[in-house]
Image (tube, rainbow, N blue to C red; front, side, top):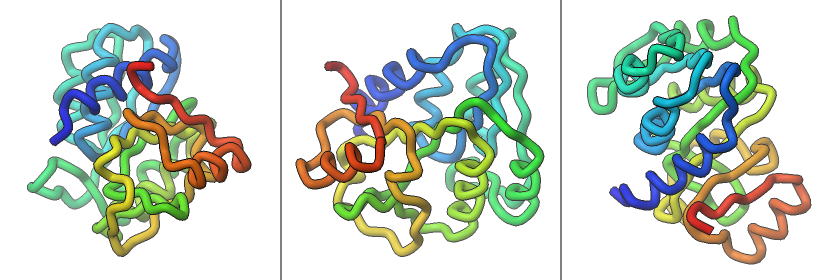
Length: 182
């Protein structure tokens, strides 16, 4: 869903990721789109719990790929659980690129899977900078598990501006908003 927006968001995000760095990419089709945009990057290390991301990046000879262990979610190729969380605790990376199932108007990132939320919280802790890739279809959606606040995110890459109140909150928090294609 929303492939054109996700591609534009991924291009904007990947443009801000330099060569010669380390990155965690978590679960979701938006992070998979970022992986496709990293195919020309060189000397990068990508740590992931997303089997699809690993399969995309195998085509980039300038990319070292580290794949987490854990329980495989057949629905999306994601690895989750305590083993996955422990794996990510072993790293300190330059960038984390994460997705979310929903973004509420309070600025909270939400998800449906508590195991995936635990992993994503660890990913945020282990990164020097955290980028959220999130298209406008996620805004105002509801999901039961809170992953983080936009206040914990360095940059939000999206395809449409956030509502003005949420934009003001992001400015207060120091969360930069990049609107893809503008």
